[in-house]
Image (cartoon, rainbow, N blue to C red; front, side, top):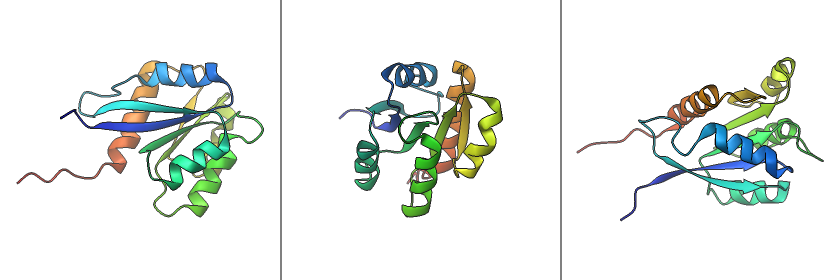
Length: 136
């Protein structure tokens, strides 16, 4: 039996942005967390499909995505989806953090991404949403 993994959706219309996010977060953001599998998507329809089917544990959305940015998408998902998975929004400027707050995102990453900060941020969000393990 294979080890369980955490599934993180990374959304951006630009493949290089998705790659940057995945590289910064890494396959294991913290030693106490499960290994991460990434689902890369470049279209809103794909994000909605994954969220509607409950297949992802966390979303990382590019705030600069076109034609619809991750901040607007985050707000839509938080408003419309019961038990929405946690969302991290990646923004280009520190000054855009307030917009990410408006978007109801659980956390914000600022480009250029610092791998230590990105992994730590994602780990904190995953820990906050983790279901406690009951040992018998």
